Length: 139
Length: 389
Image (cartoon, rainbow over all chains, first blue to last red; front, side):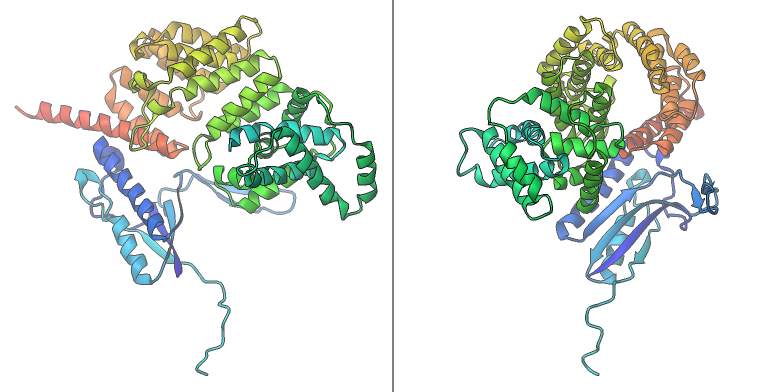
């Protein structure tokens, strides 16, 4: 099994095919989209491939240490040009092919006009912990 | 087996252990062990005296736990000093536990966790699931909380207001996990109201019941929010509303008004309206005026602006809103609503979309996005009509 992080972007990803902001859809299209997303997660729970997921607020700040006895420095809100994550989902699947297949399904969520958004999702493999057996038996 | 009964016995049992001289942290662990044992044993072998059974088992567990360590000598003293079993001042013990678990030295999240475990009798796993954190994290939070209150005297009266804040926090956490925290908050507040005669405890209980009564009508089958004005009032729980109103009236009659009674009064006026149009907004504004006097909270002023918008028209609401800080949570959503009522759909649509971006929870964000979408559809249709010859 291998874990993957699926990232959805508010901005920073290449433009989707059906690229219309959500508040320009009809309320029914919004509902259909949300149902698709919920059904997707529910289905992965049933197949035993879902780990966790969250939606993130678009508001946030950069923070860094600024030296002993000083409060951390913050910088924000994020500049318009910045890559901005909208949400994430962790899946645990048998193969890279399966991860790509699932990301493709999620990207097909319906948007404006009820048509798939074809949104670009970012698929990132986790780095594994060191395996228990490191010796190759053939050597 | 009645788990609710079992859990309702928790604070009384814990209180007795502490009165017998057990330190709070160890006693609390012992009571948890006894609860687990009860869940295992009672279905096949129900005790005649459930509370006595729990006290006996918890006390034995407490002694077992202290036997091995350096507290041996102290334990032997305790055994010799053990008071004869008999009627104990249970109500007092329960109240003291509420105070201890909501002690001002605890952070809100610690106080909530400790209250749910020591007063509510929930397991660490149940609490962890309800708050969507790992069990180990919740276990640490609870044991740190126990260390924090280790030196607090058990017999000192506490501040009811701190307890009410903790219960209100539990209530507002809603339905995130498997455990129904709303029902749990109501149960704990009901138990508190049976322990102490205090108009604000009654006010909070009434507030919870009046809100909870609308639960079934508040969400559509697809999980989307249904605003108060659009709810099917036939789905409100009228028995629960009647109970809440009764409790509130008895509390108000004592003429010691507080913020929870005033909030409950607003909820009661909503519950009392057969249709949204028949809502007594003038009286609701008056209650918000009371609340402003009691708390001077900006959130109250924001809610008041909505009520003013209904009572005196959207322009009056917008004027009330203009006096407030635009960075308040939900300010933009309220502005969008009032502009829509005022007929300025374009501004309302823009503000709904902005409010959706600022929303702090998913259901609210999705609701606000739908509102923006709904208005944009109407605006587009209007433009099409004008364009056609």
